[in-house]
Structure formats: C-alpha cells, structure tokens
Length: 269
Length: 304
Image 1 (cartoon, rainbow over the protein chains, first blue to last red):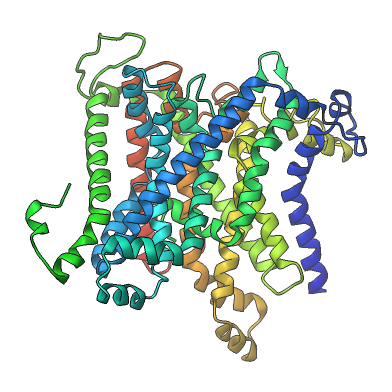
Image 2 (cartoon, chains in turn cyan, purple):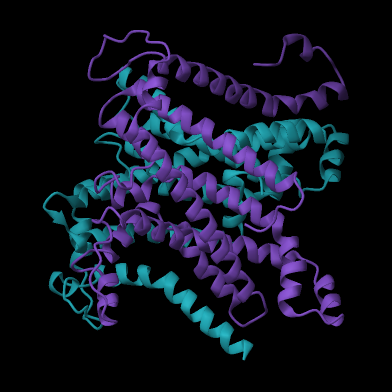
C-alpha cells in the first residue's frame, strides 16, 4: 500500500516538474499551425524550422557569443581570485577565518538594485554602458564572495599534513597553493567554476541594466521576441531551449554540488 | 594594500606564516571599502533629487525622498505585495517541499534519477521559466486553460486579471523553487540518525507521533535555513515578474523591488529609486533578523 502511494506521488511530482519543460521543447519542434492548434496536437512530425530561424538571427548569435565570453571571463576571474582568498583563509586560525567568512557572506544579502543603480549611473557618465568589461567586472564582483565560501569548504578537506610537510621542505606559500592545493582540490575548483558560469549565464537583472546593443546576453536578447505585435512562440520556444539546455547539461555535471552551492549563495547553510 | 615594507624584513618561519594573510587581506579590504563607499555614496545620492531627465539640475533636498516614499501610495501597495508574495512563496514552498521529501524519504530504485530531475527547474534560466509559464498560461492558446476546459471550467485570464496575476507568478515561483527545498530537506533527512525514531516505534509510538515529536524537531534548523534562503530570494524576485507581467495589469503585480527598477529605468528618477532600494534593504534585514532570533533564540517556536 505504501509502495503504491510512493509511486503515485513520484509520478505526479515528476509530471508536474517535467511537463512545462516538455511542452516548451515540443512546441519548438512544431510548425506554426500545430503550435497554435486547439485542442493541442500531441503527435506531430518534428520540424527544425524554428531553430533555423533562430540560428539565422544575427542578434541571437551575437548574444550567444556575448553570453559565452562574459560568463567564462567573469567565472575565471571569480575562481582565480576566490581560490587565492580561500587559500589564505583556511590557513588562518578558526576565529579569524569565521569572522572573514561571515563578512564575505553578508555581502550577498543586499538586493542587486542597490549597487546596480550607482554602477549604472557611474558607467553612464563614463560612457561605458556598451562595454564588455564593465559587465564582466560586475559579475566577477558578485561571484567572488560565492566562490570564496564554496572553495573554503573544498580546501578544508585537504589534510593539514600535506601543507606542513611542504613547509618543512621550505616551499613558499604560493608554491604550496599552486603545486598542492590546486591539483588536490581540482574537482571542487571545477565545480565552483561551473556554478559561476551557471549563475552568470542565467542572470538577467544586472545584464538588463548594464548591457547595451553590442554586449547583450542571451536572457536579455530573448526578450526581444516579446514584440508588441504579439509573441512569436515558435522561435521563442526554440530560443528558450537553446538558452537553457547548456545549463541543464552543466547542472547535471555538478549535480550534488548545485544545492550546496546555492544554499551558500544566499546564506551559510 | 595591507603589507608594510617592514614585514618583508622578518626572516624565517614567522614571515612564512604571515605570507598567507596576503592571500586574503587585499580582497577583503577591497570588498570592505567598496561596501562602505557604496553605502555612503547611495545615502548621499538619496539626499539629492538626481534625475537623468534633468541632467545638471540636481540639488540637495535632505530627507524629502524618504518623506515622499512614506506618502507614496504606490510604494506602500508595492511593499504590501512584496510581503504577501514573500510570505506565501516561502510558506508554500517549505510546506510542500517538506511534504514531498517526507513522502519520498525511503530507498527506492531510481532515487538518483529523481534527484537529477528535481534539479531541472533549479538550474533553468529564470527568464526561460517566466516565458514557459507565460506560454502555459496564455489565455487563448495556453495549456492551462485547455486542461481546465477538459474538466468543464471556464477560461481564466491568468496574467490579465489583476486579482489573479500575482498568484500566477506565485505558481511559477513555486514550480521553480520547491524542488530546491525538497533536495535540501532530503539531504538533511538522510543525515538524521534513525535510532530515536526506531526506539519510539518500539515503544509503540504511532507514525504521526514519530513525525511530529522526533523527525520535525530534528529538521527544524534545516527548515529555518531553507526558509530564510527562499525568503531572501523572494524579496529580490525580479526575472519572472519582468517577463510575465512587468508589474501589470494595473500595477497588480508590482513589488517594491520592481517599483525601484521602474523608478530608475523608466522614470530615470535615480535618487528616489535608490531611496526605495535602501529602505527595502533595511526592512529586509530587520525582518530577517527578527525572524532569525524568533526561531533560534526563543523556545517554543517551531514549525514553519
């Protein structure tokens, strides 16, 4: 009896979670006529015409390129700086470490609105609103505290003896960092990097305010399909699938760490 | 930079230990000074009447922006909606997430796959989540109204009716974030020791008694943390609001965060918008602090 309840509950749960996603992808593979048929068409011959339309759209392609460049650059900076800071912090005594960590985590509670308006105001005066670096810089700034707190949890797993042994041999701190910490915690560093890419790729608010015509990222660009003449659902669902699929793949790669990372993202879990 | 040149003169292992502070001090110092400068700068801006529509005409106006906010009916309503949305989203997501995780808290084939699937909404781009729900809730061609029509219920104007729109947004938020609560709660359930529950069962306790008196109290901390995370994010919710309704219809889904955005980037009223943002930040922090103390300091304050 309990088994049946469990399976029914699971089936309902998975249906609720997956159906919206399925429906978007199914629509992206339909012809215009099938997509708007009422009652809905369940069986159809898939067509890639919506994808062709999206992939021939120069604005979308450029946005894709911008998203790749911006998320990768911001994440490289965040993880690079984050790893150095995390290394420094795990070497400190417990109170110093906790105190600094608390401060770093507290930076993430403020709503983005409060720092994005001054940034926008300054960037507008310096004519930097259409510049990749300002966006990359702001994303790095937002992700560094997150990278630090997640990397600390990975660096803490490295046995102290490794560090002490290297110091006895006369290794300098930076050598220990590069030769021991980076290789040993590589899995954690890669996971942190992937999570930074995921956050940056998905982020909308900062991109909406700080990107211009040439620096638009995908989430901003996709809103251009919401025109006044009505929504072009065919190409829009195809674009939506292209935006989220890379993140679904990345999410699966770091499965166990997503929830851990996201709970650190807001406050310490 | 924190390092004084004199430090380099210290030889031997003492200098080695100090070297680790160079790894974090500069960045912590940078972040510290940026936050202080930013806070002072924001405060300074809110005491002026800076508008991008009137460049070069700003003047010092003292606390006028704060007074204006206090008597701004649109802002007060937006604050009310923020509170309603945050409380409803947090309570429903935590309660539903807890129920689901208790239900699936046993070994079964494919648990890993279920976990993987639950991850899908969490890693999905929020803008795409907004678009997806806008698509499902489309009044004439949407799936939701079609499903309702099959059981004989009339079409609902999900995003066009001012009395319904906020709840439609709530539905999208619940869809995206309940799985997050489930995954976190599942993890804490699995890390609980099973002994107290089993001992109680041996003593003849009923299942609901085990749940109410043993499992839930043991989960309290984890649930509070996840509720806090969800509340912080719900206050800041922007993406699905912008995509699905942009505050409409008739301002019925405008939260304070969204009003702040509109003040800055539609009305170009920089100072006033920062006043909204600052007041929202302060209110959020005070509310969270109160909640946190209520939950962790006082006895007899339990389930969310």
